[in-house]
Length: 237
Ligand code: ADP
Ligand code: MG
Image (cartoon, rainbow, N blue to C red; front, side):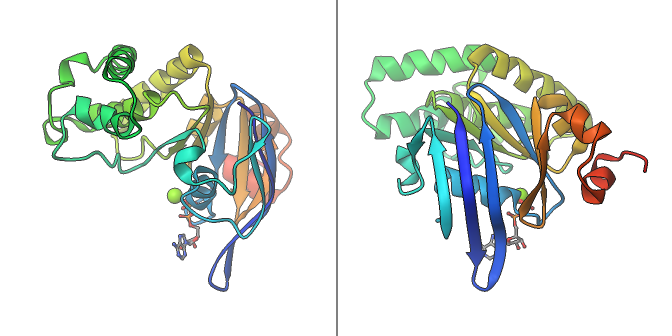
């Protein structure tokens, strides 16, 4: 579904962390939020997911205003940098937990887990606990837990930043394939220009809490709107 954010503002105490955030992401698009550490990327995702309250503005998913809804009612799945798996549960339990909690019938839960496990190639891991998994495997499980909810929107907050460089490249390709297969709208946060430029159809560049430029990678590269974008994308001036 399409995601529209209008005039979003967010402060922590006296510090304004996000201001005048405005963008429209089309249904099925893969968009990256790109910007340096501390510019507000995670806060913006958390506002969209309903993990932070916004001070002003509007968030619409598929035309429906969601900013007043609790997180669980927003039809959004978020994948965190830290994976946030439950250590005492098996992989299958980690993936099914939220669905069972919502009262989904057992056979529907099993069907979704089998599908996600097949897509992510983690079938042999379903009976293991997180501590018996590698970093890449944990990240796949974290993505699997998001997939089984079959949301209208995925939010991914620097999901590959804890992986080594080689695995990051592999997982990037897997994420692109996953997006092609599911067709779900994805918003992906990163501070890595290469990741943003290779993964997304359009990039939102954030600078100190506001949108500096929003466009396709080639446009940012060839026609940066300002010096910040030019410097960050690495275009020679
Ligand atoms: P990014 O993800 O781009 O690195 P964040 O969204 O995590 O940036 O943080 C943006 C700014 O908001 C930072 O200055 C950070 O210190 C501040 N911030 C984030 N969360 C909180 C919070 N819960 N309370 C106070 N300040 C916060
Ligand atoms: Mg962050």
